[in-house]
Image 1 (cartoon, rainbow, N blue to C red):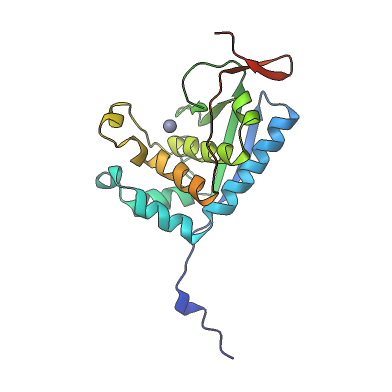
Image 2: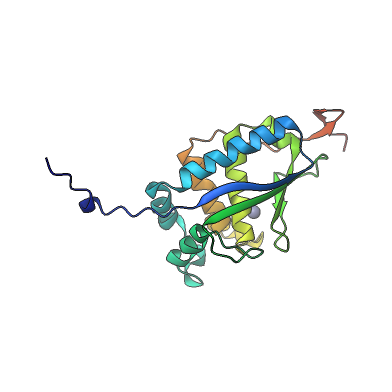
Length: 193
Ligand SMILES: [Zn+2]
């Protein structure tokens, strides 16, 4: 029997996704972060992930090609760490107090640090956290979205959203909620603001 492997012509790009540093965490948060990062790592290696990203990215293709966006992603390079070492190093910190709105957190393009509400980590499915981490990481690659895009229906077609949405779809991610909760005395309690 002859195995015809080459005819499949699947040349998946690969990258290692790992937590580099985590600050202001507790043990349960850290366990969940590790599980979320493992989920991201497992899905981004699949050729289907890349295929779906190529299909969905529309807004910024005139600025940078889909091929370049994907090459940059799989190289592990971002604004803070331009080295193409094949590793995505996630730098995560958490915060305790609900700040309003629907955001899980934010990313500093200067330091690459992803800052996430601790209670959103604890109160949502791990797949929500995986989706969030990938979305935020793509911001540190230099891709943005602006509120004005919402009015044109383009918001969710931006590069960070496309990466997060594709990952969420492939994980069959449930609805993720940014609850009005604060981290108080070792637990998540309704926010006072
Ligand atoms: Zn964003």
